[in-house]
Each structure stands twice: as C-alpha cells, then as structure tokens.
Image 1 (cartoon, rainbow, N blue to C red):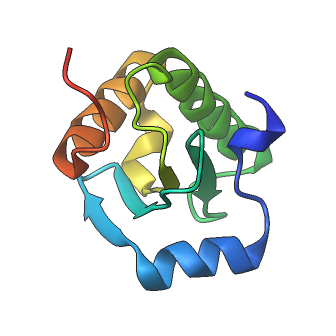
Image 2: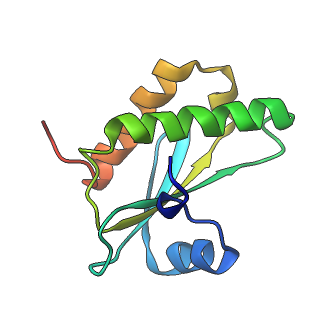
Length: 114
C-alpha cells in the first residue's frame, strides 16, 4: 500500500481519536473520521506490544494492509481510519482477520455494499 494511504504522525492519530467515531468487535477497534477534501482513504495501524513480539505484530499489520488493498474499491474515499488490534488477532490467519475487518467496517458504514 502506498505511503499516501497511511497515517503516520501522532498528531493525525490523535485527531482521529478525538474527533472521529469508533466501532469495535472482539478482534479490532476502528476509529474513523470523514474528511471531505480527501481523494482517497488513509489508514493507521496500531498493534500493542501486549499482543506479541515484533514478528507477530508486523504480520498482523501486513495482513490488515493486504485486506485493505483488496477492499480498496469498496472503501469510501473520504475517510481517515485508525485500526487497533486486540489480543485475539494473534491467533487468527489472514482470512479470519479480513472477515473481522469487513464486519467492523460494515458496522461503520465506511464500506460500500456490493
């Protein structure tokens, strides 16, 4: 995923936390904020050290990025999205994480129904 699709700075994360809305399921928490001037969505990923070592955390982030890459045509373009992984994610494979992501995104109505 290109760097223009990522949220990297702490100020941007904090802006989404303070001004956005959140939804969650057992595996993921999603904060999202509508930005009308944006031409594409941006995502920020947060995986705590409590979930596992660096290898596990990076694998979870890769799975989430790949799921967003596949869902790119369906995700509404004017969003900043921050995803926080919870502990059950460490025991899931890619398809389970993608399914969980689709579930929580559909709750936020930030994904277009096909």
